[in-house]
Image 1 (cartoon, rainbow, N blue to C red):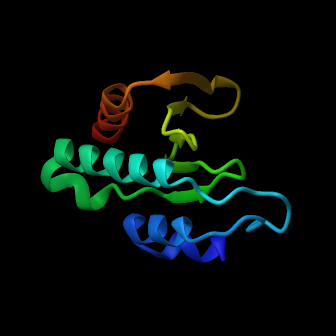
Image 2: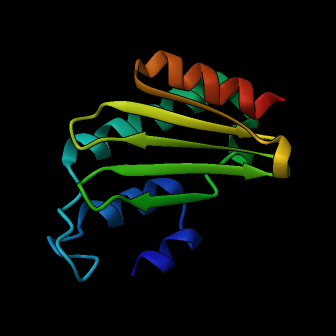
Length: 127
């Protein structure tokens, strides 16, 4: 089922993820935490509020369940991408990748505030 999620609106994808049962990956994956789902909605709402009219064009490239019960949101463009991870307890982290090949630069931040992640994603979207 997760491969079908790329065709849905991000909010609809999160609703589908919230219904995944234990073992959804055919291994020992945990159900997606309601806290992670709620934090994902909050993040997307905050990003949309900051982007205003441009928000419709910046839906995540991918919304993925994580086997420990979290959610990953990804945006990609040529030469750059950002991955935002929402842990099962709602803790936020991100990985920003800029450049290509040997010139790629990775910026990773763990346990960051909602405001920090929204600000980073917002500035990345506007470049």
